[in-house]
Image 1 (cartoon, rainbow, N blue to C red):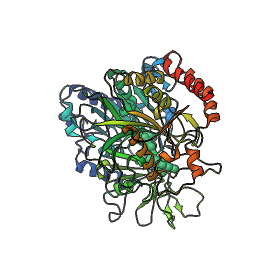
Image 2 (image 1 turned 120 degrees about the horizontal axis):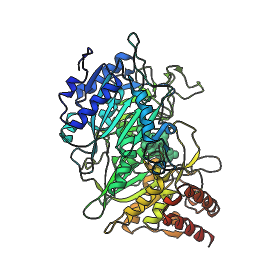
Image 3 (image 1 turned 180 degrees about the vertical axis):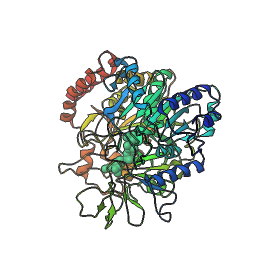
Image 4 (image 1 turned 180 degrees about the horizontal axis):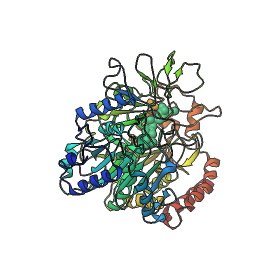
Length: 609
Ligand code: GTP
Ligand code: SPV
Ligand code: MN
């Protein structure tokens, strides 16, 4: 990398870019943002180490103790930049109707004007990094290329872990390949005599904008997670959901797991759970039912396309995990703990005196002293959390001890079951099997969950989060539901079975009724056997449910009363949902498929019988 500003910061990088569209764009962004330097990312380990050094030198990062956690760093953001900002996230489609009631919308030309003002000169004093990335295994027919331009070395380092990046992607792109453009600036230019701050961002202006028609993302003002790592939520969900609609496939907020029975039979399962509702944990769980095994393919996003055999094949577009730290422990998720032993980035956790990280729930006993995520001394008597509730680890997927051998298979894995989950203290049972695809789509479309710290705003508010896609669907959700129904009606399609799960039911005292985590394997086993037609279920007004004796709870110490509550149909509760579902559906107007309205009516009739 050139260290001194040169006359044309773009020229060195430009010489290596063969793709005309990319070259023009890099020049356009550089001319607007006025960085001191331009760095075309090659994706090498040297480059990763350089990013780490830059962050260490600027005070952005601290090296963790290499004996405890080799090649790993600790980073803290500021209080105004700790999570996705849903109220600052926009879908700038031509019309507001296309963005739908589920998205903030702004007219594209107006938003561009506003963003041009903000991006102008926004990279002064900084290096502009050009990061070619591939979502999905290189060469996979399901994978897609994007290029993120960012002024943040933290973003570059994270993208190295989360996606396939660098020269190999540029080669795949070729001279005339197409790609998604992602503009990103932390929005904090450095003046001539100014020092950089430890976590540069813009505390006044944040915009996470998507232009679905031109397949562009413009993200300004934040350096955190889904706001800044544009391959993830912005590209792989918001832009990709629009592409998926246009090209008849599915881009979903789903984990992908491989489930093997004691007989060695394999099924692949995807699961949509809202942010911080258990995808990473389920994707790498250790079964408590003897002989059953879960292996990980992905923990956050699934792209699914039909194979020639009419089945849906899923790939994980990502290469790493950006996982919720709090609650992760050797008890709750040992495989995650073993994944993050090295080569990882920790953001907004607490720091131990011996240079390691800690977060709430990591150990039964709290450390005697810590530095909290806001750089203050902390002891167990401190009346506050040591790590932020949305503290995260960034870690390579290939380090996961239970990563499935086929996790990078370019053709994907054939899906047998799709799960919809959420945090529901009441009403929703432990598991429901849908009657058919349309009913399953209805259950997904009406799913609701309590909000979490993954997004800025109130925590614990119950809201509808259809298919866990409310913050991530790049177009009108009425049309998205229609797309789901259309996919299910594809001629010759062999669709997965759809299930609802809820690990978060509570008793009157607010205690979880279900132990969760590894014990969720008992539900996975039932789902597996339902797919094979070997487990029992009873038809109820809300769907097919196991009776307590249909679920393998051998060796599990759970009161019979809890189990019957977990598998009970709360008729009153469901009847109470009916008007709320109608109300929710009303906002989509004409675009709501009639079939979903029929499903509510049928549900009501069955409940009243
Ligand atoms: P994102 O990365 O934001 O998309 O989150 P995620 O869906 O991957 O959620 P994750 O698995 O990281 O879990 C989030 C929180 O839920 C953690 O604090 C977990 O400890 C907790 N959690 C996960 N699974 C269970 C479960 O089965 N039962 C209970 N009670 N809590 C769980
Ligand atoms: C989520 O919020 O669903 C995440 C974290 O997976 S982020 O990448 O910040 O979106
Ligand atoms: Mn997520």
